[in-house]
Image (cartoon, rainbow over all chains, first blue to last red; front, side, top):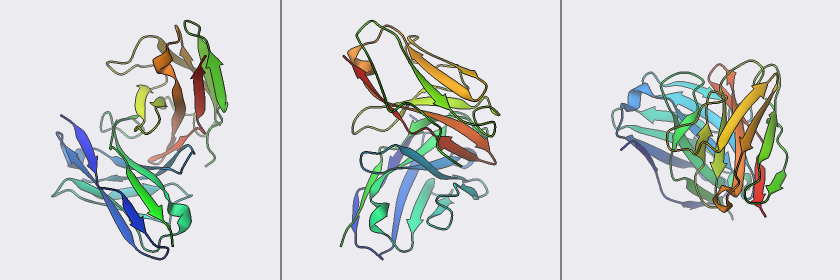
Length: 121
Length: 110
C-alpha cells in the first residue's frame, strides 16, 4: 500500500526550532515529488513547497521562501519540513502529499495524516 | 501568486446539483490543464476528487464532474448526498514546480 506517514503533533515555544517528517512507503520514494501544505486553524489549504527526493530539487511558494526549509533523505524514504525559529503564526496543521504520477504538475492523490504544530509561549 | 478565487459557501438539497467555480489567471488555470479538486471533511486530510481538469480517480463517484473555460474551472456535484458535505478546494499548477490552491468552498447539504 502506498502511504505517507507523518510525525506526531508538536508543541513548541516561539523562537524554537522544529523539524517534522513524512515517511513514504509502498513506492519508489526517490522518483516522486513530495509537497507540503499548510492549513491554519479554521482556514484553507496553502501550498508551501515541494521537493524531488531523487536529486533534492526544491521549489517554494513565494509566501514561504526563506521561512521554512524542505529537505529529504532518500536513503530512508523521508521528507522533512523545518523551521529555525518558530512564530506563533506557524501554528497550523501541516500535510505532506505525493502526486499521482511522477510528472511535474500532476495532482496530489496520496496525503499524509497531517502533523499539528502549536507554537505558544 | 494569489490564491484562486472560490465562493465561500454553496448549499443544496439532497438530489440537487451544485457547481463550485474556481477563478484564476492566465498564469495558472488558464495556462495549464493541471487543475484539480479536493474534498476535505472536518479533521481529515484532503482527498483528490478531480485531476487534469476533468478526470476522476478510481473510486470517486461519477456524480462528480468538472470543466474549465478560460481562467475559470468548475466542479459540479450532481445528485447531492449528505456525505458530500465538506470543504472543497481547487488547485492549479503554476509552472516551475509550483502550485496554488483556491480559498476553499464550504458545501452544506440542506
